[in-house]
Image 1 (cartoon, one colour):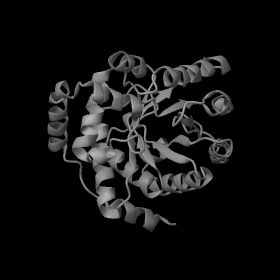
Image 2 (image 1 turned 135 degrees about the horizontal axis):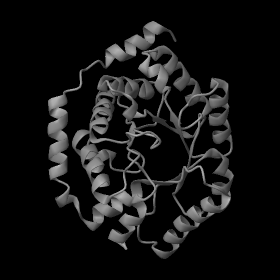
Image 3 (image 1 turned 45 degrees about the vertical axis):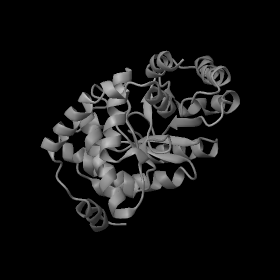
Image 4 (image 1 turned 135 degrees about the vertical axis):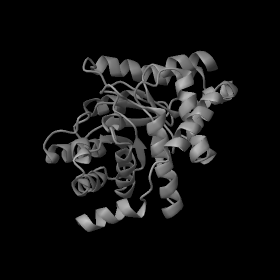
Length: 287
């Protein structure tokens, strides 16, 4: 792996973002929200949620309560889809292993010095590997945003490759932290580097900076996913996260996904929504 190879990746999928088409697509999606407000679509959204607790105040008891909430939903509403996963800090993985028993709900942890990804790389790598060894189904990491902004794509790609290897059999979601980029082309390049490095999903945001998921970032990432699929035949998942708190917010991202990459992506294996408050509001729509 060298600088020329990384440059080849960027050039291979080089395409300027069509900002006019982006705004038109987003406007059309917003206009379609009303007709998507059906119980069946709300059930779909619920099945896409990674129910998230990433707070400084989290402790073993709060995570146990989160597990119980998901377990109880499965018992009380066996005919309804449950959330796709519970997403927590890695020190709570053993709590998930012990208390989460609802079927088909993934154990998702953030790793790699989430949310800043700013520490010794050996520590990031070790945390990812520990999460995999202790049974994480899915691991969410943050791309090296500082080096992305510095256009040091070779280092970014190298780190992602090594963390992909450290994640072993766990699914790897790469968070781009799209709100940090003033140049939208960085979002597309970050998407391509992550996918080529072996990400199973690309994800918008940590929810820990001022700008989280936006329809514009979603459009750029989804078009990159589409282009990558058409070039390689590999389907990469998409996860908007951060600030998605209303059913209308969730519907907008679902509609954009369907419009850009197709209905084939509307499955928990290819589409997730990272949220903490959304689940309760969707429950009101389906119970």
